[in-house]
Length: 151
Ligand SMILES: [Zn+2]
Image (cartoon, rainbow, N blue to C red; front, side, top):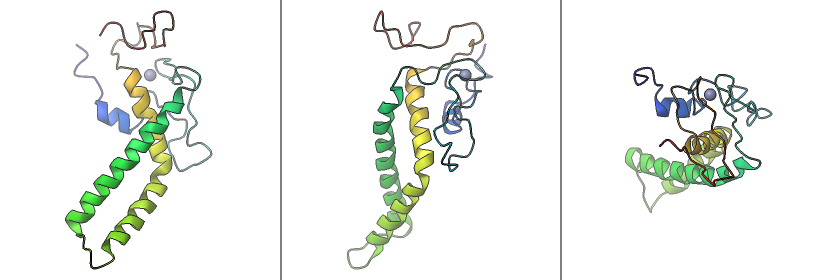
């Protein structure tokens, strides 16, 4: 029923929409390079009321995600460079790659920080087409059930 209108997972993730309704924005300001507001998020999704910070200190886990993303970008960057420009032990191409790739990652850092939060939250909160009639996702400490029960 809701399948046709379901927003695409990757599109929603990369545009940083709420994982539950895939409509509400996760961040207050659209531009991650507005550094004062890079990590500023509404407390709850304006569309479906889903809380973003599921528990105090919830975002600490994103450190691992951003580390993983950074490593991945070095690997992809290396593969691309190898494919397009090539590598050689007799010239500076490796050094150039390292400098350019590092500069790029530093520049992308605010975006990576946001993406890490999105990836992390998407891991815990599933899409819910019927979000208007169901309860938002919370961590249930009574049962220790951190995941959706109906799945
Ligand atoms: Zn939402």
